Image 1 (cartoon, rainbow, N blue to C red):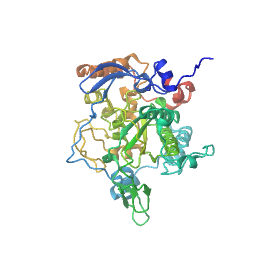
Image 2: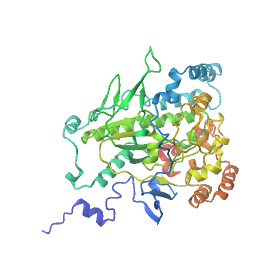
Image 3: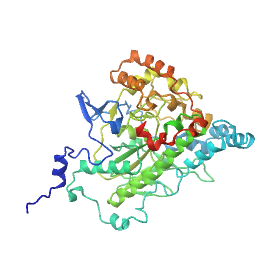
Length: 466
C-alpha cells in the first residue's frame, strides 16, 4: 500500500495557506501596493473593509521626543490621584451621588438611568476587579492537564512539532482570539511604556508608590518593589470590542455596561493567555490598565493609531474597544504597526470634540505636552484632560465614541465613503462627509427603552453580522 501520509507544512502549502493563515481567526492579508514605509493591505478579519498601510520599515505612526519622553509614573494617572491628591478628592466629594439620585429619589425611573439599566451595568463589571485576574503566576484550571508539570518542562520549542516561530506566534494570536479577544497583535516591548512606579497606597500614606525595577532575571512582586526583567521583552496587545448599541446609549448606564463588559472580558482573557504561556514554560504578566500604558503598546503591536479623543482608533471598530496586554519572555514575532489615515481625518472631523459634554477633548492641534498633571509629555498627539472626563460622569460617558465615524458598523455606504476618503487622504472631502454622516442621523443617543426592545441577534455576540 502506498504511503499517503503528508507532513503538516506540506499540507498547508498544498491548500495555499502556508504559515500565514493557520486557523480560522486570522486570514492572510491581501497586498494591494507597496509604499516607501511598507505595504498597503486588506484583511476583513483584522481591519474590516478599510485598507491599511503596514509599516514594515521599523517606523511607528507617531513621533516622540527622546529628550522629553520618560516612563510615566502610575501614581500620576487620574485613578491614582483620586486616592491621594487633595484637589482630586475635593472634586470627587462635590459630585452628586448619581445612584442615590436616580435609584432612590427618582425610584429607578429616570430614562436611561432606570433600575434595569443600573443592574445591567453592575453585572457587566463583575469580573473587572476579580482578585483572580492579572496574577503574576499560576497555571490552568481544574482541567489544566497537569499545568504544574507543564510549567516545569522548560521552554517549549516550536521546532519540536515542526513549527517556525512565525507559525508559533500566529498560534498564540489565534489562542488570544479563541479566549475572547476581538483583536490581537504583538510588539517588542518599549520599556518607556511601562510605569516607572506602582501606586501602592496604605492607610498611612495614600500617595505611596513603589518602583518598577529591572534587576537581572528577577521577576517578582514585593511590598517594596516590582521586578520586571528586560528578558520579558514582548507584549501581546489585546483589544475587546464594546457593544455598538450599548455605546450608542451614552451617556446612559448602558454605555457603562458596555465598558464594564469590556473590562470583565479583559480580565478573563488576559489571565487565560498568561496561563497558556506559562504552560509552555514562559513567563507571563497579564494586565489591564495597570503595569503600563496600554494605548502605545497597542499602537506598536499594529492594532491602530491614536485619535483626537486620545483613545486607540482601530480600523475595524474605531475607538469602541478596551485594551489589555500580556508581557512575556516568549520570543514571539512582532506584528507590524499600521497607518490608516487617522491623523489626517481627526485634524478635520472634530465630532468627538464638538459632542464632548465636559470639554475633555481638545479642538486644538496636536502638541508635545498636555494641560493635565496626568498627561505624559514627549509624544506629539492630542492630549485629553482626564479629570474633566471623570468628573462629568465617572468615566461612564462615551459620547466621543458614539459620534465617531470610525465607530459605525461596516454595512453603511456612508461609512465606506468616509473610509475611501481616508484612503486617499482627501482632506477637503472629509468635513463634507462628516456633515453627510450627521445629516443621516448617525451618532444620536439610542434610548435605553429602544435598546431593551431590540432583537438580541444584534448584540455583540452577533457583531460580525452587522
